[in-house]
Image (cartoon, rainbow, N blue to C red; front, top):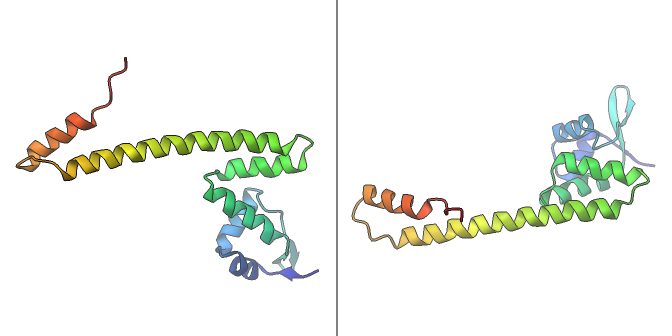
Length: 135
């Protein structure tokens, strides 16, 4: 089986060698075999790195990814954990989208601002950006 150096893994995965070492510290990657003090990785580490990259793009933290890896090896059903984390991420994304829409609305209003000077405009923005009253 082919063994890869840390630089080969980094190049193939599109990450820095320091990232690989960091993932090892967090136990996201298994400790590699050492040959004369140099790390030697099984090619399967590339699949694990791809999984980390994809889940990070989906908004998962390294801690959450670690939990997924732990459950992968445990007897607990992974799909339940995955579904739970995915539902949380969907809720987070919904909040981010709502916030972005509000920012967009305020910026569009600002582009149509009729104020004659910056002080008036700041007062106008302060009124429109005030948090909604809880009712």
